[in-house]
Amino acid sequence: YVYAGMGYLGYEFLLPEYNQRTDAYGGSVANRVRFVREMLEATRDAVGDTCAVALRISLEELRAKASDNHASQAHEVVTLLSDVPDLWDVKMDSSPTDCGASRFRPEGAHEPVIEFVRKLTTKPVVGVGRFTSPDTMVSQIRRGILDLIGGARASIADPFLPAKIRSGREDEIRECIGCNICISSWHDGVPVRCTQNATVGEEWRRGWHPERFAPAASNDRILVVGGGPAGLEAALIAARRGYQVTVAEKHSAFGGRLRFETTLPGLGAWGRVRDYRLYALQRMANVNLYAESDLGVDDILELGASRVAIATGARWTRSLYSSLEIPVGTLEGPQVFTPDDLAAGVVPQGPVLVYDFDNYYLGGLVAEHLAANGREVRYATPAGHASAWTIMTNELPYVHQALHRRGVTVDTMSLLAGFDGTTALLQNIFTRHETPLAVRSVVIVGLRLPNDALYHAMRERSADWAAAGIKSVDRIGDAHAAGALVHAVYSGHEYARALDASPELYLRDLPITADAPSPAYTERH
Image (cartoon, rainbow, N blue to C red; front, side, top):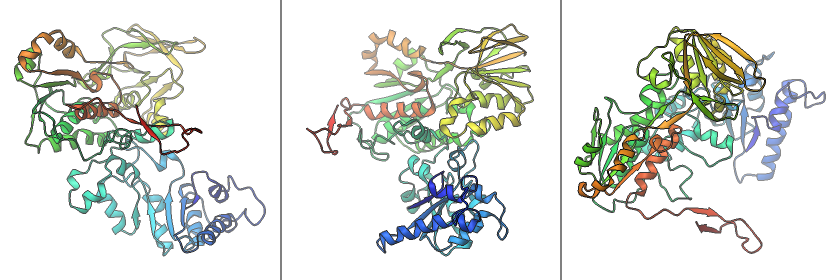
């Protein structure tokens, strides 16, 4: 593979902003492409006919540059190199556009930039672009856009996607939701995680296979209280193991926090977390799903379940935030709201201040949502950017663009020091300078706490468990520890895997030392 994209050396020769040379490698497009051509030729000389030589190239910025003789400089570069590589691997330039999240980038989003390449070469062309649906993949191939599809995120969400397409099981595909939590792992240098596929990163360490599960080791009946992401995942994996599973959801629809969040701008694809699991559960003979079933302790004791998983989610609080970077105190008042209030149908009076120290996606989305519904909105955060953690998911630039389009003013590095019903007081986190804002409502997107009252009530009645046939009561998902969707799904998966299983040991890498030089050494810990 020869790289001429993503800021690598070959890319720097192609872009005039980088390439300031005045010799045969700079100036005209023909000169700037010379180094890439020579890299390809040198690579071919080195490998001979033992393998193909591919060129991976970023075309987004070149496509935007005018050319004297071609539709763009991207067209000119491809024409000059046309059949030199054995394979063209075409992509965008920056991480946010190349690996965009579903909130801002549609499926197959690269097509407007790369659609011309196949017309200018006889060699095969491979591309990416947040592909998740087999229909979209096939469409680009049939229309002559690409010869081969690259689908990293799609394959992370479902490693058996190609096999399921081949065998006509498209309805079993676990489609990527485009949340980019996998990419955040790369940015953060931590083990990869996937919201849709909890086994990613655990294949070797814990021996988890995405499609194979140890059969149930008992006739225990499993009751899952709560039909959100954690509850549905726990139910699905337990049912696939062969347990008899009942899911009780107090609302009329399943999905937990997704019932509200998927109605927000750009988050429709996140509904796949709910839809994939519900679709599978509804087709299993050993599963009973009950909506509008708000269970109490006595109900649970009477149901005759052997094991109970409490998956009742979490609640947003009215906690404030201090310069010590911890939640402190609460802000009370009739015009102080949380996302839970909005989910229940409350529409705050404007102007509205959205105060966000959660710093992930929801604060910015709440501001967008309110502005889209006609409210004048101001957004404030103690962080340096709106929805600051979305830099990890390649969304940060688009968050600011979206807020700007909606007319939302953004105040960064700000604490919410008070609100009297007509005026909110912002305080700079460093200088303590105060800025009064005339607002009628405040929405706080900050601290979430587990909805674990039912769990603790069950614990208080533990003396009654044996008579009811209950062996265990556990919290899973946000009811155990409030987190992102990926954490809830992982928690539910882990719970179901652990049923009737010995405490799980996991593999760890051993450091390479003089006494143990082999990198293949592992140990159980």
